[in-house]
Image (cartoon, rainbow, N blue to C red; front, side, top):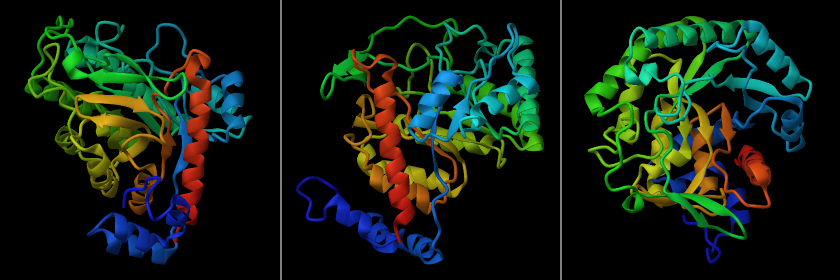
Length: 375
């Protein structure tokens, strides 16, 4: 069922449908699982979250104002260290608790979405030893410290190229939408300092990392959530790099390399949609695939307009992904963690995107409340 202004079934009536009826209409072949969920009276476990920084009093007050009670936190880390101490983590956690906010995960001060030529600690993705062993050891220490501080998850990136975009295009009002059109990208871009990295090379580096990190995460029961490559590029790569985590098949391979209930995905729904030829139809089964395997540890609940190689990042209510349908699938697979805005549209009169984020908070919070009442 495609919900449009001209649809015979209004969104209001749609939300009143019994869960089994609505999902049966939307997802042929999945009605039985949905009916079981409806019969059990299962309520959603999802939580509105955010990963915006910094984690200080001013920003925590802003988050609390809009009902954000669960976040990815950013501890203040002493200069020169790649990990937060237990005291630094507890200080951040205690500061958040003053506003009734819980730290559900953190991001390390490296392994971010930064392009390799701009990061100070590239050794893991460059396969530079012994430096990568030193950086892995720092991450292992962070895992242990998170366990001691009561923080259950870490999100991270394993990227060389960072987030690729070709510019911004006008959106509604004065908003500007981040855009990627492969046809407009540099036809012969210079290589990064990584040089040429084919698929086998990249998988070797990922495997080396996982074999040393996931056993520690499993021992200390800390979920490790990896972000996909944003966006996917042609199979031959871009800037000399094959983006192995830029396809759904690549993500399927990734979760099997080191099997563990603590090894999974920071499932950026926007980035995964960017991998697909028809995201408005395909994304729901992708959510279902990883969700039923309990490999989604965090969701960037972001919408796009377009498809692989040509898209804009838009507000959640206007893209090609039906967010009502998407959140019902997350409930169907009993996803229990954060739904967070990610790359929000920007506007000259909204410095830092705080207004756009606030719109997303309200939209996601309402969806969670609505899906909680379905069935």
